[in-house]
Image (tube, rainbow, N blue to C red; front, side):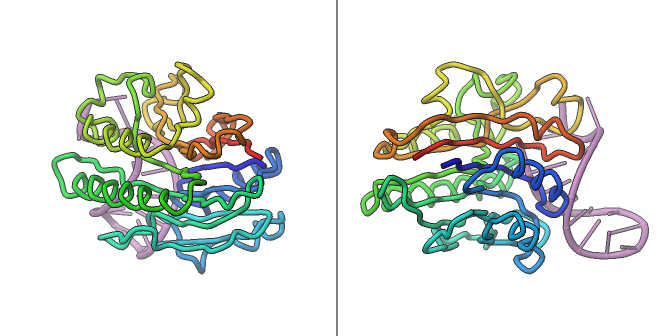
Amino acid sequence: MKIISWNVNSVRARIENILDYIKETNPDIIFLQEIKTQNENFPSEAFKNKGYNSYVFGQKSYNGVAFLSKTKIENIKNDFIRDKLKQSRIITGEILIDKKKTKLINIYVPNGNPVDTEKYEYKKSWLTSFIKKVKKELTINSNLIISGDFNIIPEEIDVYDFKRYENDALFKLEIRKKYRELINLGLNDIYRYFNGSKQEYTFWDYFAGSWQKNYGMRIDHFLVSSNLLENLRSININKKPRSKVKPSDHTPIELEIN
DNA sequence: ATGGCTGAGCTACTCAGA
C-alpha cells in the first residue's frame, strides 16, 4: 500500500491540487498537515467522491491534521500528547500491515522560530512530551509509522546551506538531538534508510525564488519502527506538486509498504 | 536574507509559517 505525507498549507486553498495529486498517484492513505480549518469546513465530500474517508483534527486558521484513507482507519484519537497550547497537531489511528496491528501517528511539530521566544520553548517541550509518549507506546506496540512535518532538518546535508540555519529552530543542535533521541528509541528515518547520502528536499520557501534555485530543506519525514522494516518497498519525494500553480510550499513524500 | 510570499480571517491589516 501507498502511504503519503503532505503539509498542504490549507486544505481548502489547495483542494484542486490535492485532487489532481490523488488522481495521478492513487495513494491508499494520506497524512495531511496544516489543513488550517475547523472540522466542519473540511472538504470531506470532495474526498468522499474520490473514494476516501476523512479523519480530521482541525483548528480555525492555523495548524490542523487529518488522514484520508480508502479503507477504514480504526481507533482514531487526537490525545496522543497533552498539548499545552491546545493546538491541533497530532492525529493517530490503527491499521493492519501484513497482519501486524500498526499505529499511524500523523504530526505537525511546532516551528519554534524565533528562537529567543516562548515559541521555541513550546517546540522543545512539545518534542519532549512526544518522545516520552513514543517511548511508552513502543513498550505496548512495536509497529509504528510516524510521519508528518517535523520542522526538523536532521543533518547538514538536509538543507541547501546549513550555516545559515545554525541558530534556527529547525536546525539548532538542541532540536536535532531531539530527533536523534527519537531515532534511538528504535525508529528509522526511511528516506535515509533507502537513499544513503542523497540530497533531496521536501520544502522550499515561497519567496526569493527558492524553488527555482533549489534552496530547500528536508523537514518532512517517515519514521518507522524496526519491526516493520521487512515490509518496506520504497520511499519517494515527489517534487511534481511543488512545481504546479498555487502550490503548497511542501511537497509529498510517498512510502510503499506491504 | 528575522522576511522580499502565501493563507486565514476579514474587508484593513495582523498573525503565522520556516
